[in-house]
Length: 359
Image (cartoon, rainbow, N blue to C red; front, side, top):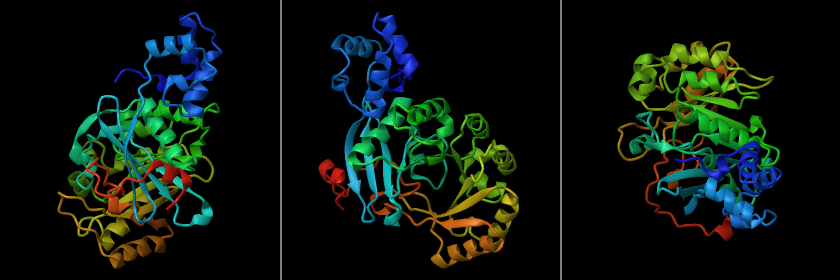
């Protein structure tokens, strides 16, 4: 995709405007409209002269997403399907916290159309790779979700469709836009970028100052198993991946998150739990155990609740921070590993109802 207007920094916007013979200070105004207000059309920038708007959009088009489908799960999770200007479907997921007293709202953001990583347990992999999303398309998911929910998400996780490290230039640019004080002013402590294990991307992400939180989809304790379910391991095996994780810069009190999708008879044995303890020993980290979320195709099974608890207890006995992540939104294919832009069977929720916060 060509560069879109929403992907430009304030300095880049000012440069475009001055090139058209217009005042540089209009760049701040445009940026605040695009990222502070999340406008979908240049016509909404009411304090920017029409000549400036027209000149800017003629040079760099604004390529807004179209909200195609909004679904709401029984647990309050909301899946938002967007259509890009070239007709591609992407999905984001709004996840309210189980504990309503904490008032937490997490948005799971997509970074690509489809995915090239081919993880065997993930529905997005069945789509193959479409293209990278622009920084503008990435951040607009946040702005659209904010309007639909009637409030700003408290946390952002780059765990939707695609591999963020496979589109790191645009993801990095999006992080800068989201953290800018003229925009939503997100703290990097509230943003997590997930990867299947692209080591160069982890190294590059660690050079950002400040860096966001890092999550790694580990999902196996031996190279033999990880090679089979995650082809990326053949290039960057577990030892190389953990070396990069240990070198990732962490501010005081921060930890690397390891996601561990549990597959019955594949990676859920007591021996796997004990190996996981040895692999992660001494690293500031936490482990999220994710019961596999099924979709049509692969022959995996979700372990029993008892097996998952036993696995957790073995890690806890070794003084590891470990949590079982209850599937959220799985009745609308919105849970971890289920995003594949399928036809919606659940009813569409009116935007006005979402904005009101009604269940």
